[in-house]
Length: 337
Length: 299
Ligand SMILES: [Zn+2]
Ligand SMILES: [Zn+2]
Image: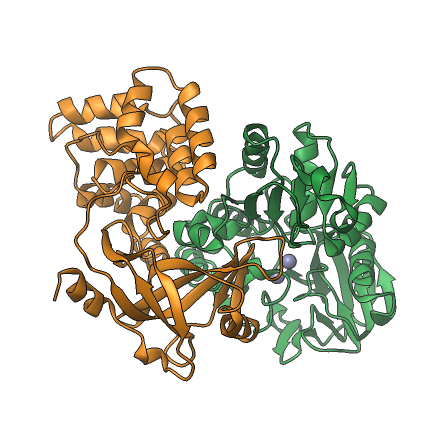
C-alpha cells in the first residue's frame, strides 16, 4: 500500500521519486531528471537524461548548448508517460514558456509538483491548470498577504505613457531574459506598440525560442548592433548597458518585489514596475483551495504565512526547505535585503 | 486619489528634475479644479489638514485580517502604514476613488465619530498606492519637500518651489560610513563614476544617510569590493555586503547634517563626498546614528 507521502522524498540532490527512479528539478547532476521549466535554478545542465516539454528543452539548449544532457525526451502538456511504476504527466504552470507542473501517480495516489507558477494572464504561455491531488507541492515566493500584483498590462501601460512624455529618451527595462522580458514585450505589442524593441544577447536567444514556438514578439533587434541614435525613443529590454551617445534614458525595473517601497527605492530606477511571473498571495491561496490537496508541502519562498493560512483552513501543511532554488537567474525567488 | 498617489510614488523614485516636472505637468494638465489647486498645495507642503491617528486606521485594518498574517506582513515591511495599505482587502468596490478635495473637505468637517467609517470607505475605494499615500496624508506623515533628500542639491532644484530646502546651521564635518549600494552614473560606460549610497549603524542595522558620486580613480577599491561582495542586483544598482563581519568602510566629508524625518535615519548628509576608503577598517569602525544625532545638535 503506497502512501502519497512516500511518492517523493527530499534528498540532497532534490525531490526524488523512487517508484519512477527520477528527480524533479534536481540541484545536482543526476541520471534522470524531470524539469519543470528553464530557469537556471530548476534546469541545470549535465543530467544524463532529461524529460520536459519541448519548449523547456529548447530553452535549455539555447542557454547551455545542444549538449546540455545525455539524452532528452519531450512530453506534450497532458500526455502521460510511464516511468517504472510511476505515471508522469506535465500540466501547464503559466510561469514562463514551457513551464509545467509535474503530476506523479503511483498506485492511485497523486502528487503534483507545481514548479514555479502564476495565475495571472500571460500572452506567452498557456494558463495554469489546477489538478486535484493528495499532495500539492507549491512554491511560495510571494507568500505574504501584502503581495498582490497589479495587472501586468497596467504596468506595461505606465512605461508606454512615459514613452509618450519622453519620446526622445531610450526607455530601458531591467527584466529577466527568460519569461519576464518576453511577457513585457508581448504586452507592449498588445497595447499597440509595434516599433522595434531592442534586447541584449541572452534575451535575444530566448526571444527566438518563443517565436519558434508560436509566440509572436514583433520586431526584435539586437542592442549590440544598433547605432546609439536609433535607441532614442525606443524600448530596450534586458540587463545590458546602453552604448555611448544616446540621450539620457528613462530606467525601469520589472519585478514583483517592487511592491514594497523599500525594495522599489533600492532598485534605484526611475520607474519600478510591479510585474511578476510568480503567483501572488491571492493566487497562491486560490490555487490551494482549487487543488484541495490532502496535504500541502511548501518548497521555496516566504512560507510562514502560507503555512499558517493553510492550517487555519484545516489543510495539513509542512515546509520543505530546499536550499538552492531561487538563487540564480530567477532572482525574484531570492529575497535579499 | 489613485492618480495623485501614483504621481507621488513616481516623484519619489525619479532622480531627474526635468522628468519630475514632466510627470507633474502631465498630472496637473489632466486634473480639474479644485483638485489641481489642492494637489499643488499638497506638493508644496502648504496643505494643512487636521490629522487622524494611525492607531485608528490600524484598528480598522486589524479587524479585517488574521492577526498572525498581519504580524508577518508587518515584520516584512517594517512600516505600519505600508502594511495596512498592502494587506487591506477592499470589502466592496466603490465606483470611484475619492478626490483629494473630497478628502480635504471631509477631514475639515466630519465629527470624530463619523471619521472611521469614512476612512474605511476611502481605503476600500483606493488601490494599494492610493491607500498608502492616503494614510500618510491623513496621519500627517506625507512630507513632500524634497523627494530625493540624500542627493546633493543641484542649484536648479532649489529654485523649484516644489522642492524647497530649509535653512541650516553649520554642521559640516567628516564621518566613517559603510557602503550599501553602488550604481554606475552612466549606465552605458563601464568606467563612469559610481553613485554610492552609504549608511551608518543604527543598533544592528544600517541606516542610509547619504549618496555621493565617486570618480573612476577613487572608485577602484570600491569596484573591487563590488566584484567580490555583490549580494543583489536591481537594474543598474549593486547591493553589496554590509554586515558586522564584512563591509566597506569609507571616510566621507559633508557640508551639513540635514534632518529628514521621512527617512529611516531621520538625518541625511548634505553634499557628501568620498575622502578615502578606509582599507582594513572593521565594520564596527563606522559611525552610529547616535553620534550623528549628537553632532547635528552641535555637540
Ligand atoms: Zn522560475
Ligand atoms: Zn524558481
